Length: 532
Ligand code: GLC
Ligand code: CA
Figure 1 (tube, helix red, strand yellow):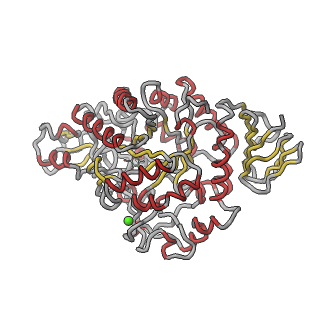
Figure 2 (cartoon, helix red, strand yellow):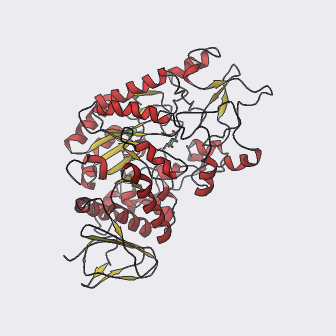
Figure 3 (spheres, rainbow, N blue to C red):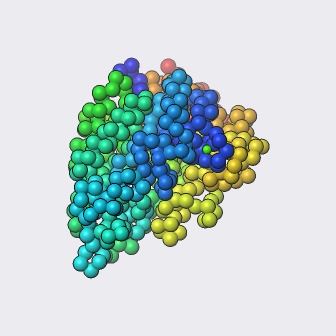
């Protein structure tokens, strides 16, 4: 990395789901003070920054992505003072802090929505959201389908409908109303003034809606649209999302230009990373033009199979999509919205792929627990909390499996996460996956990630150019970056690769080199330093 590059351009950013990280006060839910208590652990990982999923005041109908006061900490997570202490502690330990911003919707318990419900049709209070009269037959204003299943419209007590792309408890804001824009600018400044180093912007492609008065889906598409979620076959999902008049409208870019001017008015490098799902994928580049945001999440790898061809397409595609604007990709294999990668691909595969991606130019988002190679938790239907489960009448199980709290201890009650019953129970079998157990085992996933992160800077220092190399096996991916050669064996067989280099880092301890050949175990990856 050249010294002019901003800190985030090749950073490793650790996503913390606060409710599931560590409980400091014995109520079964993680909190901000709990994160602070684990500062040594965070520091030991070798990450550059943490990203905190929402901890704002919220009735918690959608894991805090239903915000009822964006400038207040929810009591379940602590107080503003706890937040201040956590930011200071992180900064003292050279960790930056990114927070989530949820601009597409508020919670229905936000003061504005309460006012809107109490006000009349057409009133200024209602114009902060999208309220419409029913059609003459009483049906909702259009046939848009919520991302969580069901209609995007719910009825207010007086019979008008309001729009919600997600749960009925998450009314969408009307971004044509200057009051909405002004409120978010205040929120940005509020957290920037409290020292945050950046924002992850939720549903960044969704703020502007068009053609609200029209039906969108042809009747034959409706049944598919009802299943519109990450579990759907990606090509089909993209096809359905290609035209929805509530995503990726040109008007969103003006909002980000305004925000960028706010970020730039601070005397530090503020990062902004957008959660976007756009079609065609090339349009992602529009969000990271020089006067807009800094990064876009690249979700392609969350659904790519562990096959060399498919991975090559995804990875090289991520570079070429952003090339026109000179931005680097972001890499992520897990987050709070998708199945954990160790469950989706298998543990060895997930580790091999992570080590491979960590060698690529760009920044890497690590979801808490991924460093332990945690699988999805088994969640009883009676414990489920995700609105996706309820809105699809159980057709989709939802995202709770990826949100089960972290196991810290091998022998303490509730794996050391909390003295009380965790909000989602932790399986007994997770004791052996706990931080404590993995600390003791030098071959553990935790040590693997730590090792990789502690020496990754050498790759970053070798520049942002990579060259793909043809390999003799179709199941090996190989590229060079500076003096490094990076290999991924996607096959279930041992593979040889001709190289005079030596092993610098490997996902599997059995990887070896003899001066002319690299020996790759099945489902493994490695970083090789080439002889000069
Ligand atoms: C984003 C969040 C997800 C949330 C949704 C609605 O996709 O990552 O967790 O449910 O937005 O806010
Ligand atoms: Ca707690």
